[in-house]
Amino acid sequence: MPVDFSGTWNLISNDNFEGYMVTLGIDFATRKIAKMLKPQKVIKQDGDSFYIHTTSTFRDYSLQFKIGEEFEEDNKGLDNRKCKSVVTWENDKLVCVQTGEKKNRGWTHWLEGDDLHLELRCENQVCKQVFKRA
Ligand code: VLZ
Image (tube, rainbow, N blue to C red):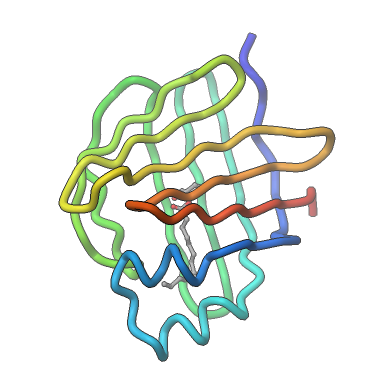
C-alpha cells in the first residue's frame, strides 16, 4: 500500500525557490512577490488518482493526474511553458518528470515524519520545500 499524501499542508520552509524561478525565466517583480508567499497545498489521493492544488494569496496552481499516465501540463501562471508530464511511484516517493524545453525538469514528493517534502528541479537548480499539516 502506497503512502497517503491526502490533506491540507502549509509551507514552513522554501530553500532556493529563487534559483528555481530564475531558471524558469520568471521575471524579477513576480519573483519578489512569489518568494514571500506561504502557499498551502491541498492533496486528494484516491487510488492512482491525484489532485494537487497549490494556493496562495497571489496565484493558484492545480494539477490532476493518474500514476503512470502521461498528461499535457501547461504550467499556467508559473512559466506558462507546456510540457509532457508523468508521475510514478519510486518506493514511497511520488516522482514527476516534466519533459519539454527545460532540461531536468520535475519534482518529487515524500513524507518524512509528519511533514510533507517537495523537491522542485529545473536544469541545475533544486528548490526544497517542507510543509506541515494545517
Ligand atoms: O507543485 O509544481 O506539488 O503542481 C506556486 C504558486 C506553485 C505561487 C508552485 C506563484 C508549483 C508562483 C509547484 C508564481 C511564479 C509545483 C507540484 C507538486 C504540483
